[in-house]
Length: 311
Length: 139
Image 1 (cartoon, rainbow over the protein chains, first blue to last red):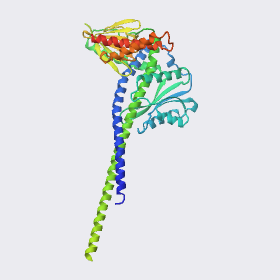
Image 2: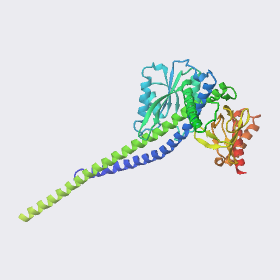
Image 3: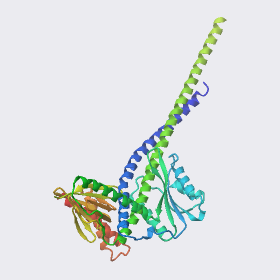
């Protein structure tokens, strides 16, 4: 008898919580699917532009670019991608922890933060870090222009010496359950990665051609073609490098978003499951209490009737 | 024997076009380029313009509506651009409106120094490329 009403009330309260978490799970799942699509649609561009830059560097000898110069300043800048809202498991914690690890050995005045998302801003503001930029309320489906704005700003920071090294810290999307916190160097760009990409692609092609040649005999052809650049290579590089930076940032944005929805979906699914377990347990308890109450009543009736019958 | 080349048009947001074609006609900053199989390797910036693709016997116009580059290899053309649209995706009415807006702004630039001429100009070019591509496709 005792507690039956309370148990009933708790069941109802857990049920309504479950309804909410279920709904949030479903919303996150729908958004995740779209974010995933966008992230994979954006991948070819990043790859192609990397390859193109590599080719410019590979075929035009040693040309430099301000964005590839070693830094003038020892100061670092971390662009930290978090969400604006919580309820997404360890999504934000992981990114923030990685940032703290990366910056641990550095003197405080050399660390600058660009916060993307409210959670990052709150975290670093509380710890009194130097926040030099913030981007809040990023759309669920960020447009490339966003990345361009951010990229132009970061490029400026690098060129005027405010920051010598710029990193992006975000969750890389692996699957809905797994998001891998990553620290990706943005600036300065190392020419090595471009050269490698282009060399690898050229090698692949050469291999493919070789195979082709074996089947269609005799078609001898110049293998190493020389590239022409219109206008000169430096100008081409000047147009490509900023775009590569934007595409890196765009990728970070999209990956972070996909991860956020994945993390939220998983967290909400776990919450729904936990609610289910709780409801199950509470229902058992409730039934037991009910059973006890009924037994109690029967006992009372029997006792009373016996007492009455005997007299 | 005419062999086909692989054309890929890639924007930051998606791959707009990926198919093998007979010829690509592009507007480079240094002039118009007709690209066939075995073209010399070349990297060149493109104008905001209409790219024409010959597939079989039809010419397919694609609006390159942002700054971009073409990377040409003997058997492959990769166009990297900030934005591009297939003709059937283009909202012609919107493009006309954008064109009018841009023209308005450009015509008022004498009396209003606050107008960003560069921006208006590029908006106009974008709108024109879109309109051209869409109309070419219709006819």
